[in-house]
Length: 396
Image (cartoon, rainbow, N blue to C red):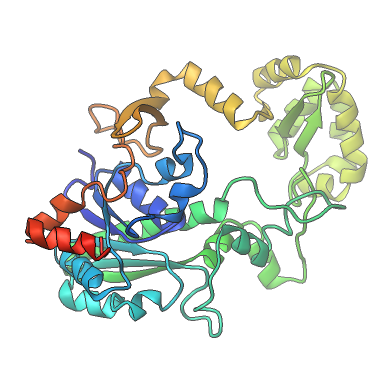
């Protein structure tokens, strides 16, 4: 059932960050009601057709949820949310700052309906940054405006977006963490809270090694390709068969082991490479030496040597290659669930596991648009005629 069994979450968000946080709560056993626009639904239902004509994007972010529709711009749609809030523990939204208030669904109003409600707002900018709190944004905007993009890419090339929507994912993680903290606090006080998360601060939270130096010195960090600005050797190397490997031998013991692996113990006596700080300072000298040695053998041979000597190293794999490798070794990482239109679909198991779970958690497949609306509304007291009237007026 999961540790959040009995917790009800209203997911009124859109796209990725808010809905992802709700999916993580569903993974942990919460009942999550996904509320979408009538007729069209969440915009990410239409991003791709990769899973038998349906959006893999939507399937991945809305697993484990019940589905209903409500037009939050209408008084009737707002009334439906207000009724759902009476029995809800958590509401997650990720609209532009002030939007929920214009719909009469802001925290103050819903708190008056349910004082125990935990209301999680995720926006592009913090609500206490004057002049920015109302602006719209997304993962790519966040990567650009926070320095992540400037810190990614080749030193002499353009700034580059990180391949995954990492800021949206970080925002979803932080929402889930904040909500769980508020749930614990409510267990003591009996009172809910308003959890605030911004993509701006979620991006900064991804850079804890850089932030103290920037705040307390005149240093800056910009893109260095596959190299690390503070650690060496810690980068990509090309092998004799044209493959790429990451080797991260920056702490002293792994540095000694790497020198042994490449038969260059003489480097240990070179003062220019005595410590990680020295190796970073003299990287222009060190890098060609290691690169030349790594090019002498194929990737598989280096992997065997480095594993035996306990040097952190790995080949560069595609996403498909990675998933196929590890799910072949551990088939239990893949679970099968039933989608009401697609039938059986394969998913990765939830990323959080508890030892108390007797059986693997198999997430419910994402809902069809408005799939559970009639049942949810009937539970709120709407009769069949009222529900059909809402549908005719395109409120649901």
